[in-house]
Image: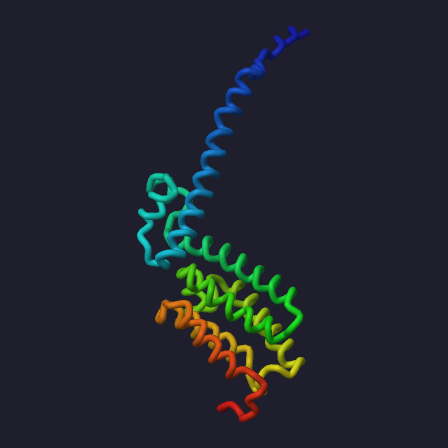
Length: 212
């Protein structure tokens, strides 16, 4: 008969050890999240002020982190720019939806979108640069914006307040062109004047056919 095996005596980690390991890792995770949030906030502000061509060292300086920390979170400026612009674009479009839904008059809803877009351009260069160049920072953003503008156009068409033949592509091109005008003229009074003139051309008062 074989002798009984000795009982294994692997000691479980003490409560003190477990708690110590937990508290050692938790601050690191919290610090990483704080650093990431600070980088995104700083990048959003810097891109808004200076556009996408800004040096990432300025973002690191404003966020209070070193370049190594910045690159650990975002290996390239393009990664950071894309995330920042997608968040800002989504917030902008959400606000535009809410404003349009709260505006019963279809024409006022459409003109309000133009005013909001141009006002945003005056305060966020990188965001609206992406709108002018590609319609938005991502394909998803472009699609959502186009759908929204199409809805505004359909409301105006059904109410008979928009010029016959005006397409969604026309409105997209006009809004991008006017956003670009904001950068060119700078002065708010001037770009609002040009916006008013342009929107008048969309009015159903003009019955002459548009160029094909």
